[in-house]
Length: 124
Image (cartoon, rainbow, N blue to C red; front, side, top):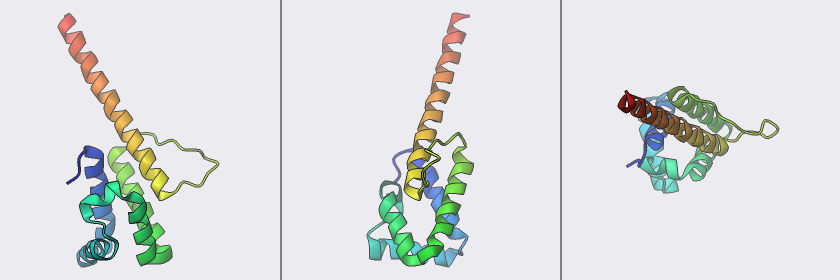
């Protein structure tokens, strides 16, 4: 089971991207990931690199389509600004790390904002 909100959102993004291939295909991919690559659905957030490699082995060049779809779904969900070195190619794994950082930074800002509101209310 995912241990935090980011992992839950990442699993939703993966699920939506795989569902674009059809429900039975999605289930077959999860089964294949588990049996052939030892990656259970709930482990995907902690096994990003092996997950990426499994997609590439199964889909070849078509894996990039799914990777982009996952990234788009995740970005739509978390929003925020993702930062990376523009001189380098941005890989799926690097994107996931940047998205996770952005998500946690945004969450901290929201928590700090709520704390400030509470402090302001107690001063009144």
